[in-house]
Amino acid sequence: MEELKKIFKEIGYTEEEMNEIINEYGIRDLKPETLLENVKRNYSFFLSIGYSKEDVIKMTKSLPQIYSYSIDNMKQKIEDMEKLGYSKEDVIKMTKIFPAIYSLSIDNMKQKIEDMEKLGYSKEDVIKMTKSLPQIYGYSIDNMKQKIEDMEKLGYSKENVIKMTKTLPAIYSLSIDNMKQKIEDMEKLGYSKEDVIKMTKTLPAIYSYSKENIKQKIEFYDSIGLHSLAIIDAKQLMQSTSLSYARYMYYKDIGIDIDETNYKKLFINKKIFEKQYGITKEELLAKYNYQEYMRKKNTQDLGQEVVDVLENTEYLGDTEETIGAYEKDEKIK
Amino acid sequence: MEEILKEIGISENTISQMEELCPNIKELSKEEIEKKIEKLKEMKCDDIQVRNIISSNAIYLDRSVTDVDKLINTMKDLGFDNLNILLDGNPYILNLDDFEIKNYITKREEKGELLEDIVDDMSANPFLFEEI
Image 1 (cartoon, one colour):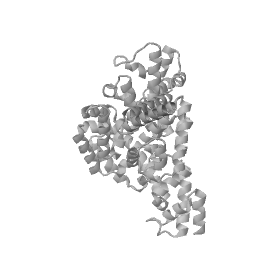
Image 2 (cartoon, rainbow over the protein chains, first blue to last red; image 1 turned 180 degrees about the horizontal axis):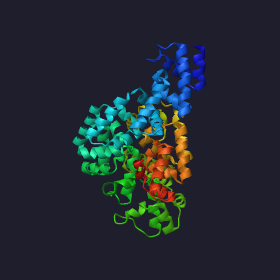
Image 3 (tube, rainbow over the protein chains, first blue to last red; image 1 turned 60 degrees about the horizontal axis):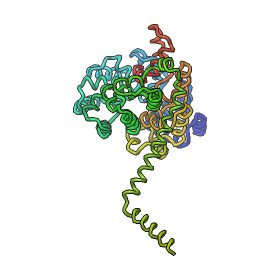
Image 4 (cartoon, one colour; image 1 turned 60 degrees about the vertical axis):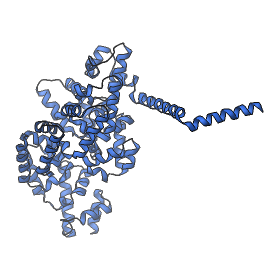
């Protein structure tokens, strides 16, 4: 047991993590000497195929049973997955994110691919989607069907959902309440539900953007009269607001007003922009600093709020009058 | 964990959405999150960009620092600059591995495009990373 503790410590586990691992189902029945042997063997194996120490710790904390698997089984899993269409590097990346892949049978994985093909994805789609969201192998097909149905109720067609999830598989990990909340957040920013459905078909990533992020983008485009950009060309929302702001200000300084007819100027390639205007992206971003602009704007807004409060608070008004009366009395004295 | 996310301007509501997308973040220590924030600042991300990137891509917080370093170094070697702008536009880039970007670019090069043009195209159109 002492040697086991020593090796866990050497690898980098805390005592608490070690205790959790050795008490886990599938591990706790192993004799200490067997577990010691397995830990040494599997740890070396993982390092030899490309995982880092950090990865091994993270994977085994999430799935301690990995220390009960044989090397042959894990090698076989990698080979089987390569036959499905993944590269060895893909498998390593996927198992870092979702170690439970090592506990799934290859038949189970093949079944998931077949089930998803029946939903309307091609095998290539499934391979691509699971590379970025390997957790899909852990989702039940019924839950996935339910997600499609729920999204249809929101106003998407089944084809829309298939297309959107190919681009953003993470939609499958979002709850429908979360998606409804995103739609409501966008409605509060001045779009109709239909607008939101339209823009998310083009840019499903809107569902992954935080409220803070999307609000900042929309408020900026609102401020320059481009509220409709999110509907007519949603993909452009992906450009950093810092760059859009800098380019907008630059155009303004050289006498070009940006509106719906020429907004694409904000999104041209760096090379073309630099060639045409002779200013690099670095120079532009340094000259027109968005964060600085926001800081000033927030301070001004705050200042205005204070003025509004002063003007609209009877008590403070009374106080001013009282002070005035007091000063008058003092002068008389 | 929540405390530090709130410090960088992320609301409680957004934090619960982040946890829904990546439940592992609940287990992360303050130091682990600080390391990821520091990494973004090394790429010259300002406070707004740090908030945007983390709040829109919780998975980044759960990635290994080694993999993120490899990705960033590869992107710089390939010619990507102003990474703060690129990642603010598409925070999901941070979930890619270095080899995935290399493979994507190699495929386009094989079709006759020049590396410089591909990088320029991807930088101007961050949604292209979704093709990877």
